[in-house]
Length: 602
Image 1 (cartoon, helix red, strand yellow):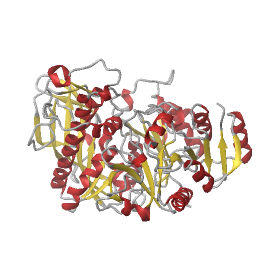
Image 2 (cartoon, helix red, strand yellow):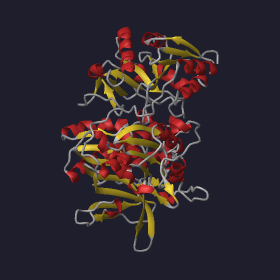
Image 3 (cartoon, helix red, strand yellow):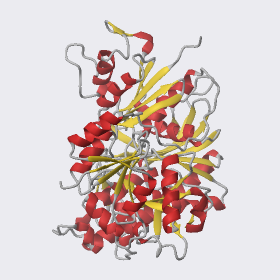
Image 4 (cartoon, one colour):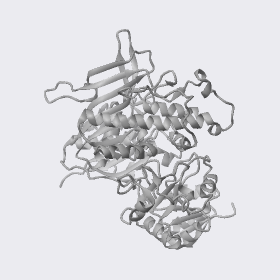
């Protein structure tokens, strides 16, 4: 009988988490914040403990980050283990005797940050071979040597040529430094640091560009901070950009006609590895203000507009350049900028004209590096020659089940009342201008809700966006999503050649006349971040939307994540009940159990 192979991979930094594989299949993939309840949390300790619910032994623990385990700040007292090896040992997941870890169970791939982003996207794309484009804030910490001194630098944009079983060849890399370093273009840079060697053992070569300028994502981070947000909250800048307009008084963020993305360092000052700064003191038009809400200032809105439009243009050019480098028109996109659903839609028109097929990885943030590390390491073992089929499902969280007694006990604990309910009950409530929380099945991996941890509402209310933003304590300019029956999507939205959009990675344009029918979920630029739904993907959610369509003639519902502003999505039923108790939300529907929990008089 063939022995099962258990591999857990952990992403250590912000958006940390765990991916657990059994024989190459994802058992669960989970971000730490869902368990710790701290947004963007690092150090996936609670997620590692979760592994014990599925296996008591691992064959391999694979580590992803931007710095090696040796440079981890924390150490276990007495043993001196890094905290992750130590925790795995204490949980019994790996075997350790003295100073030896059996079978080299702990594998550190932290120096391959961009390659792990690429691996996640490639293996989930369904392509046999692909060009991987990684556009990221700051990847692996690199120590480089100049004639005068050594200095630290970081990956910002990378192109890989990808093939099975685990072949990721670097073709191009932009490396950003704090400076001072003159711009250096190395057309024949050795790739040995990344483990890339030819069959004869010689190092493979790639093009490297080393600058002290901000990469594309760092430019976005700088403008995000300029608009009053944390650098990691780039999604807010994406929501704000349509409120701006072209402003010829602003300097350009990027150098015109450059062959590769080149930001203006006079305007954008990178603070690698974290964040970047808009040099507002240098330009009168960008002068700072003491406004309590920077998003109401036109210079913030206009720079957000410039940032979105200029960065997406740079990434499009970079994708075309990447295809030129590899000759492969199957493109997978990952890294933090891959979450920009406005940009993802923008690329399609041009890429379609060039015959380029695009797959955007839904888990493009650093949590995806755990998936990439697990899958790449498994394929590197060469225990099979199976190629992965396309993976559009993001219902990758742990499984949960509750007895009727547990549901009733939790409801009573939080002051709720349990009643029998159907999909019609939910539709009755949302069409009467109530928000209903939906809790079912496995949680969604990545920064979006797809009907298992969602708040649903009637999209036909004219003031629905303001109403839900108020309940969720979100900013006025934040847009919402819609979940639509896949068979009806092309009558309502222009998908630019796509058949569907099951993972909500594109903010698509609505067709003429649609905005008036569903004003709650159409953004000020006429777009909507949509999720197409089939019964096979999510039977209860599909039937809920079908029931709403029968009632209102509209084949979609207003969908937003089940959380309050600044909180992670709910993970467990306990999280769901707490969120109801702490908010003006009153209704929680559990379709698998046919019950509605109602909390009033809070």
